Image 1 (cartoon, rainbow, N blue to C red):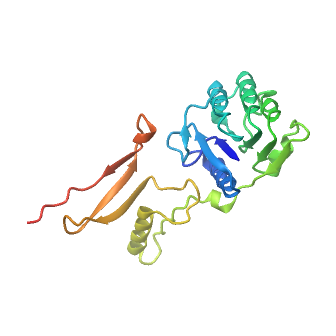
Image 2: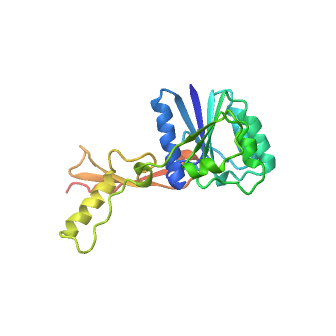
Image 3: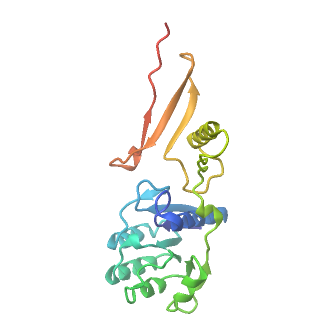
Length: 237
């Protein structure tokens, strides 16, 4: 099945974004062909474009022929109103399967009828905890209600902690942390990638090694998000 996941993904978005990234990994493990779509150009997503209000409905309509199913993360950053929710619900109905992935606490609860419009277009609704599920009493009968609670990997950022001042061999411990942060950790949770990494490479044209630092920078396009710096090698004497 071709599945489109729409919503903010790490590194921004906090705990709910990491839950959403885990859902993307779960769908992929099930054998689905998964693509992600976020409004944040620096997120770990395949596509990026504005998704506030009517922009969201427009993007959902445009992509409905490419995907069988859609999962929409319902988050405050969508900036939905009662009017734009009508357009989003109409666009969602173009997909064969619709899942709403609710943030916690559930956003837009003060907007009367807004969530009901979204829920009416969904086959299933996923909540972060039982309390949120119990509060959603206006979900239509026949809609699947699922709790996808946070896990330990969602709570951890994947970075080793700094040692305390009273620990033995503080200098060695700090050095070890710096090195691990520099090369990144294996088995990090989705979205916990380093914004600054370093790798050591040896070039046959001159003796010694060179450190390349890769830093994310904000550019005008998605392709301009990295900047590579390297020291100029010294000429042989």
